[in-house]
Amino acid sequence: MKTYLFLFFISLALSSTGFAQFPHCLMPSPVIGSVSYGDSLLNTREILQKAGIKKIYAYHSSSEKLNTYRSQTSVINKNGNIESITTCFPKNEHTNTEWCIFDTVLYDDQGRIHEAKSRDTRGYENSQILYEHIGENEVKFSQITKMQNKQWDTLIDYRYFNKKGQMVKLIQTRKNRPTETSLYYYNADGLLDSVQYENSPLPSIVFKRISKGKKKIIGAQIQHSKFKWVFDQSGQCNSLSITTTYPPRSNYTGVKKVETEYHYNPDGTLSKISIKRSDKVRSTMSYTYLK
Image (cartoon, rainbow, N blue to C red; front, side, top):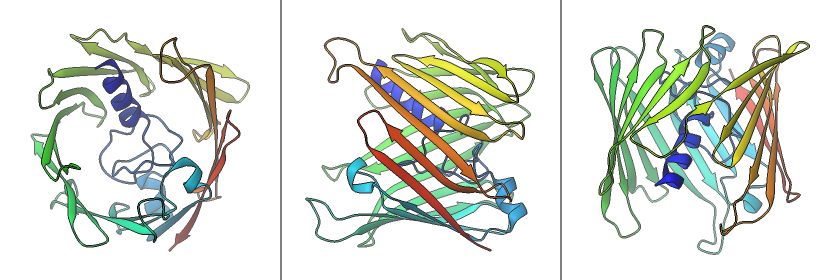
């Protein structure tokens, strides 16, 4: 359970590929390998709408090494919201050709995400996400996924927001698992300050901030990993470093470090993301835009 919650928090709090509407992306992440429909601290809906972006094409230089997707094409509507994502993977030991996943995002009459569907190259639907907006500050998030045994599994979250649109509470309900609750707190600047877990052995996560010249640095210890984000004066994230020290008797040993650098175009959109790992793997996500 500890590992499960840790991985869920990382994917939730650090996801950053998304473009629109759903404000659950709280801190920038390495991006590569993630798909999200939520707004982010990197390519935000505001930036995309202001720049008049209609389509984003991302290409990953080392997809085979990291066992992730090679390219991703996102279509953006006039409000800066994502309408569809096509994610393509290279051939591997299971398939002799490139294969793709097609995501479609639907919105209600208020511009809020209502539903997201995912299908494969053959047209088979493999997941569906439903967003039920309960009042102004609560969303029921239901994800229906087709498992390897061809059975369907449903994951349900309840997400609560304050008047600023920041998520302050998350309740996770899973089949055959006890209900888990996470609480999110913010400082006066609106930045994530800490995360606490109810009825859980997990320790609280506290984000520490320091200023160094013209840069602002945010750090956090999340289980066995140390995170450090560096922001410039304009509020753009320039880099993220993650150092993980694996405990004895785990599946891995020693220390692993991942360094991520973010580069931007003059209009504020991402130009590329570079990742360097301690095992000498290098990768780059390059972005091009259609207006």
